[in-house]
Amino acid sequence: MHLSTFRGWLVPAAAGLLLASCQGKTSSSETATTTAPTEAEPTDTASVPAPADGITPALIARHIKVLASDEYQGRRPFTAGEEKATAYLASEFKKLGLQPGPNGSYFQAVPLVEIAGTPDSTATIGGNGKSLTLKYRADYMFLTEREQPTVVIKNSPLVFAGYGVTAPEYKWDDYAGLDVKGKTVVVLINDPGNAGNDTILFKGKAMTYYGRWGYKYEEAIRHGATGLLIIHDTKPASYPWTVVQSSNGGAKLHPQTPDHGASKLAVEGWITLDAAKRLFTAAGQNYDEAYTAANKPGFHGKAFGLSISTTLHNKITLKASKNVVAVLPGTTRPKEYIIYSAHWDHLGVGKAVAGDSIYNGALDNASGCAGLLAIATGFVQANSTPGRSIVFLAVTGEEQGLLGSDYYAQHPLFPVANTVADINMDELLAFGPMRDLTITGYGQSELDDYARAAAKEQNRYVIPYQHPETGSFYRSDHFSFAKVGIPALYASGEFESRLHGKAFAEKERKDFEEKNYHQPSDQFDPKWDLRGAAQDARLLFRIGQKLASETTFPKWKEGSEFKATREKSLLGN
Ligand SMILES: [Zn+2]
Image (cartoon, rainbow, N blue to C red; front, side, top):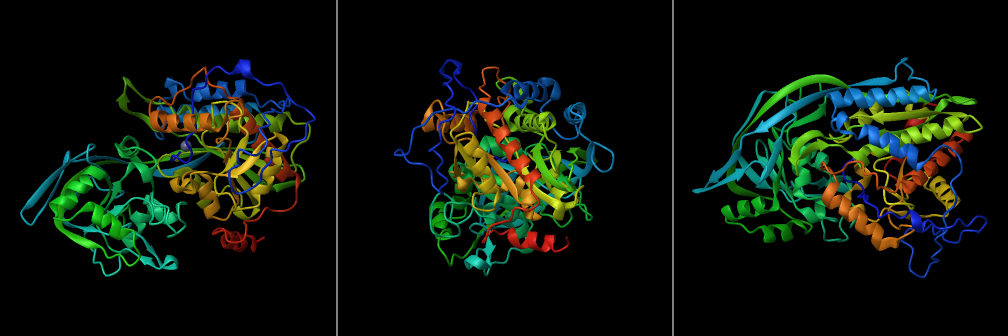
């Protein structure tokens, strides 16, 4: 995933602490509010006993263990790991008796281009008698979506353009009065409201789409720029430079485009905060002053008076990756669909860390795929068959920018207007049962209400995601569905451990984020406590069962940016 949530991993053996069940006790801990529960609220720690629905920690562990094994080589698209992972998922769905997709196959081909870019080991910045040499990996990560063996950037003038945002509805334009044609724009990470300042600008602490790097690249293209460099700052980014390195080094996948990427930027890049400060200094400017100015309305960008030169060498491969699709046909409304999604891909084999070069992606996202299989098991074992059809979709290329889910949304195997909802899983948690159900994008759709009802069955409360500054809503596959109007839910426990409280959960999440996220150490650990993962899978299963039994379509709420798209799409029905 794109660091939407940071779930912990290692759990102290807590089996001995498993609390007695408390059946029949009415829950009073449900706090369906928009804020986290306070200490004054009940400290009921009762676990609801798990029904025998086939969704078990052992089953989830079994699937994670296979998918995250070294044999699967980190499940990178276009590798033997892809073949193994997609074949495994398809065969497991088949074993459960699920049908293939409408094309008679358990696979949907996703045409992609792989660009294995090797930037020069240095980039030269010069002008006004000053010069500065930046080093690849230590100072910058550069890549391109142009399908050309060599992309040369020669003396491209550097311009500082604040956050690189043009947002008329916020009366904000970092490009106002700035000529960036043929130039390389340098911008701050995130958006003016949320970049660690928690101001009233934009949506404050919560990141808007303007804070996403994909948006910044697009905006720079609209202004005619040659390149865009984002200044990485760990705090507002919410992840360290090592994640930028592991996510942007080596080969990258992109959607195939008719013009072979010719209209994309020559260079999409990241530089460290330290390198940025040296750049400002070389230009006779001050980073801190520029930063302060960029956070005020009416900011005006400025040229550095320096130019950048570097070259990218690319190896280009056009190839199709695969989404895996399996269907449990509905009995009464088979042409209406509920989709469960999880990405099967991860980063593959990369730079060795502590002697290990396989990025196994056990939690990210073998666990979500295990969730798909567990939920499928639940539906198959249930006494009644769902009225609506249930679709299980394991998508490719999430780590490369939601490529598989985006391709599906643009080339749906089942009509978008007949798709009731998407329920997404990305990183089930491995530190035991939780009291909360945290919803990413809370307040967007009526799926919140379904989630609340299902949470209540497990004596859990619902809260909004507590770190909206990370832009989590835009960082996993549910966003691809939301963009085409399909109400999408992304929810899991993460705020309060049932056994060890909130501080413990926070620490586990932080530890994962800092030590294991997108690192080779995200691997299966037999000491994990997957009871919380099983609970989350069950909860999402229950939501799907409910949706499958109804005849109505859950709606986006007033004020959601996806509401209009959905209404337009439903007009076709
Ligand atoms: Zn993920």
